[in-house]
Length: 151
Image (cartoon, rainbow, N blue to C red; front, top):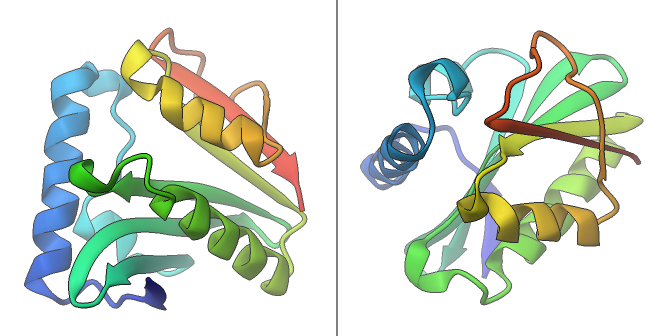
């Protein structure tokens, strides 16, 4: 598996992200959905990575700059047939290393509170993320969980 910076111009990436956004919409009320679409991920200050197994897109993740020392983990997704195969762990390791190299001191994230998101929360806990209060522009929401860690 290789992890590459993705400029979000390819149709495979667009389809993969559209599946992600649609899935989040099906699981979370509209006012609690924070997944970024292609336009949101293309904004300055966001870096997007794709995880490829050969030519197959198997995962993705992004970093959104909040301030010079704090970034947000966005758009973590693993292809459903590849879940629990190590894709998310390798991608998260890569993004943590990149965040450190970019000079960030803290990385935070928002994920869902429903049982569907339990594997994601456990992954983040395994990588040292702790539960925290809402950050940036987020508000308390029963459908959201907030986590953070220092780098």
